[in-house]
Length: 267
Image (cartoon, rainbow, N blue to C red; front, side):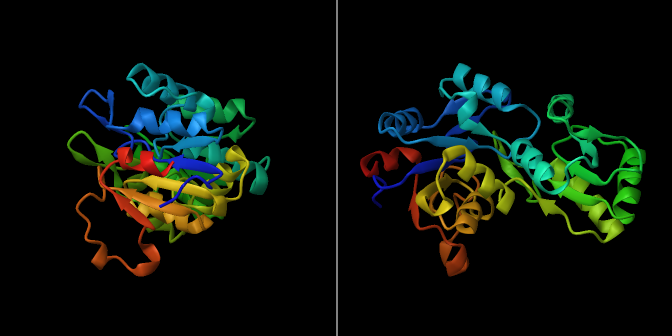
């Protein structure tokens, strides 16, 4: 695949550019640093879109840089970024109940979101949570049953970790609220139209001119297809053992590599 005409690049993080140990420290995969450097040297923009929603882009970038993958905060996107933009465009001024870390709540409040803990919520947004209070979930469910929109950072089963799949607790909470209310959750992380729009705005190019690289067919490759981007599946993570013959033609990536280092000759 020729990539010299691409106007920008989108990378997943865990399983595509790094593997994490049990201590959550990242180890860059072969070629990861070189690929990002080659793209930057060409003058083209790139962004790392992680579905991790427990930290700020600044914290993610700082951690990756410390662990050997130099990244700026400007090059990092999370579902919280696309959630904030989505709320501003579609639910400006509405009261939001947030399931997420203190860092996520603080950021959303600093961005002008009107947060609430009561059943008067007009939007319920679920990000990553370490623990969940059932009374709070019930208040959220009653708000949704009364008409509040249910947004979620991630509604797929998880992401690639040190010992395989790490299940998404945010998806668990979302599924619980959706089950008792019959509501359909709106995804604002990967894969979603909200994420496509956020990426295009950050990179300053239409999605059709971008290349999306990731390890998860259901998340990263699906994100690329939503925007009409070229897609590259790396076999170093979530979908490493997936038989593409079992995947519908519409869902298949445009190219498959064992690792990101194989992109270097194409750049």
